[in-house]
Length: 248
Image (tube, rainbow, N blue to C red; front, side):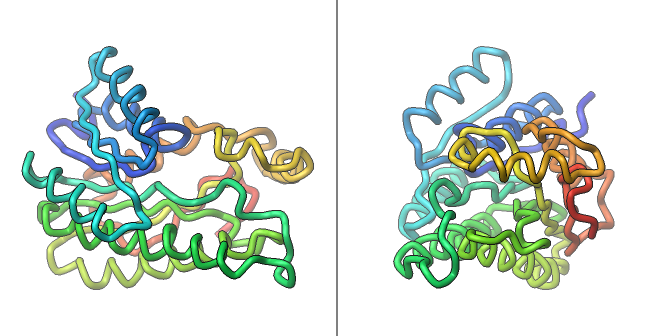
């Protein structure tokens, strides 16, 4: 038996990286996973691979920068049945750093906020209409918002907003016994972080209490736990998953 047997869970940003690991590991725990992403070809490949391996998966393209796309995607998801969980993983991360606050491009700032903050809110709002009472939402933040990573201000600010929204969502949805929590992973070795300078990776890997690189499989257990009944009386909380680079 799996911890998520019989549950249907939506994961955004599931075509690759952390989201793909989440999808695979949630399905391994018995969930039917609805994999969502803007990267249509990568999403199809990843969904097909997991299906061929015997996992219960669905796919749905969605653009978090478009309210219309989110509405269309969740209407289609809802037509196929109710859901029991949501993992707000999708975010704009690649290419959003490298300049200090005096150099940062305001248009890029707006784009990051549109996807990472507004998109998270709109996805949650769309999902709640199809979410069973007693369900669980996990928002993927970042430990950059806890230690104030430099030269990454829009991303840091967006993830700080996700943490704050998590608490507000937990208050608003608690009447339906819907739990909302957030995790704050550290810098993880995935496709989206290949552009990160080697010295930033070394800062993390040397600075962790559990020294070394962080991989997607190091994060997915926390998501499984927060979606399962084992965390049934926990809501509005932030769980850093970073090997002890930041303590909360």
